[in-house]
Structure formats: C-alpha cells, structure tokens
Image 1 (tube, each protein chain N blue to C red):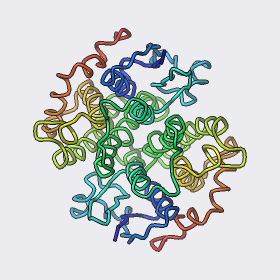
Image 2 (cartoon, rainbow over the protein chains, first blue to last red):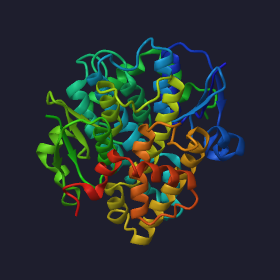
Image 3 (cartoon, one colour):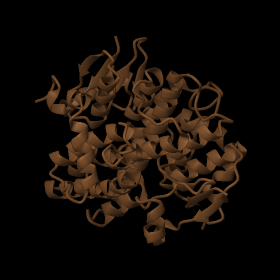
Length: 214
Length: 214
C-alpha cells in the first residue's frame, strides 16, 4: 500500500492529504514529528534527502518528494477528479496560483526558516511574526488579484472546479490564521476557503482531524 | 509575437530563457530593471501582481506568471524537445529536483528577501551572506544526492536528456558562484552544470549574454 510521510501541521503534507482524499486513494500514514527532529533521522533522509515532509511512497515502493511533484504524479496516475484544467492556458493559470503559495509564501515561513531567524539571526518573536505576516501579505495580495480575475463567481480559485491552486490555498489560510494574520484584505480568498472547508476531502485532510494532532 | 519580461540576473527569467532557446521559439524581450524597482510600476503589476520576473506574454496576449508554470506551458504547447520524461514516475523525479531549487532555495535568496534581511531585520552583509550560503548548502546537498541517484553517468540531472531540473540547476549554480558559495561538496552538480554550459541554448540564455547585462 502507498505510504504518506506526514505531520499534521505541515502544510505541504496537508496539500497531499487533500489530493489523496479527493481521489479516494487508500494509503498508510507514517507520522514524522517535525518539532522533535524526526525528519533528520538517517532512515528518513534516505527517503527524503531534504529532511522535509511530505514524502510519498508509491505502491511499488518508489519514494517521491516535493508536494507539487507528488500532486502532479497523483493527478497523472489517478486522473479523476482532475486537479488541473484540460487546456494549457488554464493549467498555467492554476499552476501559477499554486506556485504563489508553494514557491513564494510557504518556503519563507516554514519551520526551519523561522528557526534560523530566531537562532543564527537572533530575532525575537515580534520580528519573526513580522516576517511571517509580511510574506503572507505579499503573497495573498497577489493571489487575491489572481482569483478575482480567474476564479469562479461561486466557485474556487480557478473557475468552478477544485484545482491544485485550492489545494495550496486552504493549508496556507490555515497557517495564516494560526499566526493571526489579518485576512480582511482578501475577501475572495476567505470566501473560497470557506467553500473549500465544506468539502469532505478538505475536512478529512485538516490538521485537527489527523491522528497525530496535538 | 510572444514577449518575455526579463532581467538578466533573475534566475527565474534565466530558466525561461533557456526553455525558449531550447525550443527555438521567437520572442521579444522586455527588460525589467529590478534594482531600480521597475517591477513595482503599475503597468507591470497589472501583468504580474506579484511584481516579480519573469512574466511571459503569449502570442495571443495572455500574460503568464511563475517560471515553473511558464515552463510547463511552453512544454505543453511546444513539446519538442521535451522538458519532462514521458512516464509519471520520471516526471515526478524531475519536477521534485526542479522544485528543490524553485521552492526551497531560490525563494529564500532572491532580491526582495535579502533586502528584508538588511532593512527591517537590520542584518549586516556577513549575516546576509551566511543566510544565502546556508540555504544554498541545504538545497545543493539534497540535489547532489538526487542527481547521484537519478542522473545519467555522462548526462544530466535526470538520465541523459536535458530536463526541467537542468533548467533550474544552471541558474542556481550561476547565483551560487556570484555569492562565492563553496561548490566543492557537490561534484556531480558541478559536472552536470559544466556539461550544460556547452549547450548553445544555455549559452544564449546566460546572464552575461543578455542585452541588459551590466
């Protein structure tokens, strides 16, 4: 059976959990406790040389890393429901929105980066919170403009079907709330996220519904 | 004609320049001078709400953002030579390597982040250089392990064909050299990069060969 190496609060793991639930795929969860450093254990590094979550092990025992690459793999091997539109232009729009989160927001605000700010750079919690909020605001402002242009009126980030962009949005919104970022400037994102939260796959994947939630 | 909004030193622009050259596509370059803040001009923000380079405007006038999304679009609309293997597992491997650079290394070390470290966080040049080197080392160590596993003996990041992973590697190596990072721990990456530099498309896309190079 396929295995997902996951941590409840890891937003990249959260993205993959949503996809697995949407596509109705069975898998075994292997919990990697990031705060205690389990991702740096030698056996985990052999699977994922970056020491990050998630990793996904296919039914054939192939270990995959990087959440967006895993999501595209799941979409190519289990096409229903699709995570990307059929046309190249639509796919480019959806991928760009997903990458605003995955390439510009999340990398700046994940655990190892916040630790570096506090440790080697000697920043206090207020400065770290300011950093976090700064990159959330920069990313969400751009994403709000994009979903206003491309989103469905009563739908999701791109038109009326859930896509890769929504799988990235929901975990990033969860993170932003955890850090008490002001979401008032992003009414469309809040609205879309609210709609996503009503879907069973998003609820199943939510951090608070994971067995390793603490 | 298609347009690329580019800056010679922007490594995300550099990736797209390589793809356009590999696929032999004609386009017009529009130079966006990042150090003087041209990416924050209102007309540019209308095209690219993140105020980042590159943007790519298709022949039909559709503006695309995010370099990896643009690269996949170019590959879907102009399949030869392919930037991804044909099989889902190979595609997942290549995308994961590309994302080590595009989602973990480059976002931490681009211009706006280094400016934030110096400005709001008041870090000196030595601390900024330390930060830069830290994330380059973390990313390249993982990438070295990945290309050792998946790269071709006399080939590239994944097997013997140039892929999306190589299009991300070469600009990141250029950046690392600019910041005088020690590349001795990554002999396979250095070797692959050396091979890439002999290809006409990589030479045509190199920062020093751009009209806006200064």
